[in-house]
Length: 81
Image (cartoon, rainbow, N blue to C red; front, side, top):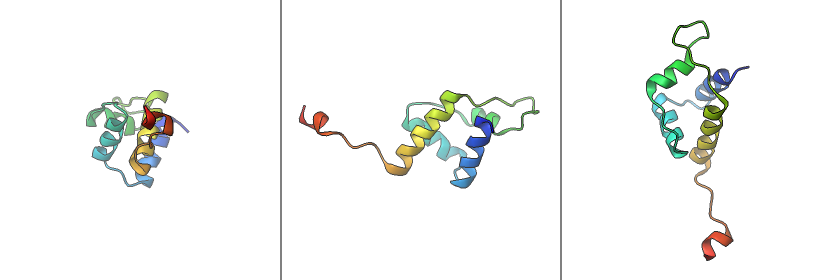
């Protein structure tokens, strides 16, 4: 299973639209356009297909955590300073 497959399956399972994915990526300061997303969703034999890299999927998953749970609370050490 490729990173593209994982991204597509998560998008369908969580009922995310392109705008939602863009917002999730912005939560981790990773800007992506709709055309870049559409290239990731295409079949491998399509001329505009782009393989999803590890960095993109990692940032998507980190942004998804923030989107679902909210930002990580500050620890005691950070709040005391």
